[in-house]
Amino acid sequence: MPTSVILADDHAMVRQSLKVLLEREGFLVLGEAVDGKEAVRLAHSVSPDVAVMDISMPLFNGLDAALELSRTSKTKVILLTQHDEKQYVTHALRSGVKGYVLKRQAANDLVQAIREVCRGQVYLSPGVARAVVEGYSDPAQVNKALSVRERQVLQLIAESKSTKQIATLLGVSVKTVESHRTKLMQKLDIHEVAGLARYAIRHGIVQV
Image 1: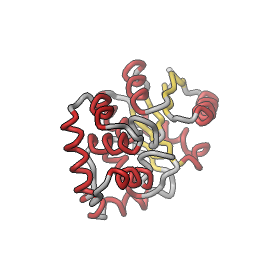
Image 2: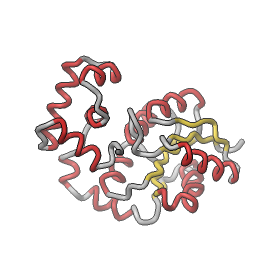
Image 3: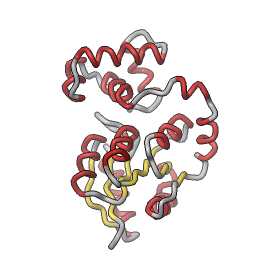
Image 4: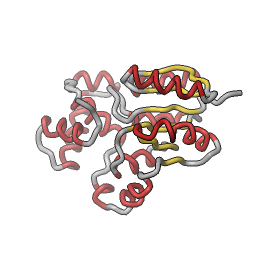
């Protein structure tokens, strides 16, 4: 039985290129998703061995989708991303990600990453291992660590969603969203909504 995979990226050309690559190597691509929410639903529906996802996606980024899948399914997540900064790598591993592959090295690394995570290993593209060590030893990153819900709220704020829209999307009250926004501002020492949006863009939580 071939290893089954789903792909999640908001760029159709990226998904198509990955599908061609993986099918050529004998993997079974069960489906594609354009954002993190759809990726989680798809994974629960078809139960793939592996989900290959970008970090920066609308509504629900790859880090939060990975954490959700690590809690609710046996699907192993590999992030395929352009980001090699330490905050992304360490957040990914803390979110239950089993593989971290840089897009510029995808053709060489992704197939190996899938095979290794299916054997129970953790795979990191060459060049990101040092970021892991630096990230875990940097107390500033720990102090600024956001909860899953805080990251979700931050992403939706940066996507210009209103407080009411965020509450509806997350299934919580408006008051709860306001509380999360206040905590975000305190943690990040940012005191305006526009500043939160700039922070999310600068740190790759959303793309422009």
